[in-house]
Image (tube, rainbow, N blue to C red):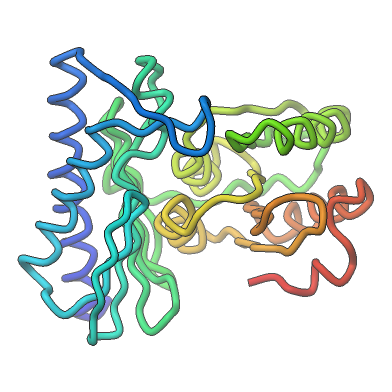
Length: 272
């Protein structure tokens, strides 16, 4: 790994670790109040905002010329060709309810290409990291995508947008997915779901309408672990329609969604 990638990875880990401390402090205090965004199911807390400010502070102190974009509104221009994509608290609803799936996600793009990801599980204190073309780790131990290619034997993760009408359509799709797979899991934290595909705990994951802060860090880890990451168009669901799995299982999942009318043949040609 070249020096620049190593330095960026180290900084991403430091930034995520700093925000993990913000999460833990709030959990220890036990006082969590939430506002809503798009709907009653779409929560944001002061911890989200404080955590994003902390991420920006750590990154700017080390690299003042980089671009930064965050879920809670950070938008810092840059000239270096490096762009940080930040989710200060993925799984906010879980966090508010004390449900043990939430994280901080720090992604790095270089010249428009996602290259580095760090996802820090702030309940279990597990750290996922990856550099595309180099490899991925969980707590510094190498991880790789599962080799399962039989959809019927696959454990698949998914998630639901906090928009009532979209959820209805997602439930209809789930009725078509469930008979075709071993089972389905839903944690409410997409960055950790994607990392669980990267580590082989899940065989695949799909979800629609996620933002770049939900995807970038974990997708870099997944790609580094050997996953195929597909961001597809859909005329049925908010885009992107994300599919993550090994290459063979990805093709099986995309065929399932195409047969279900969620994707059209033309959509599947727009894999990124």
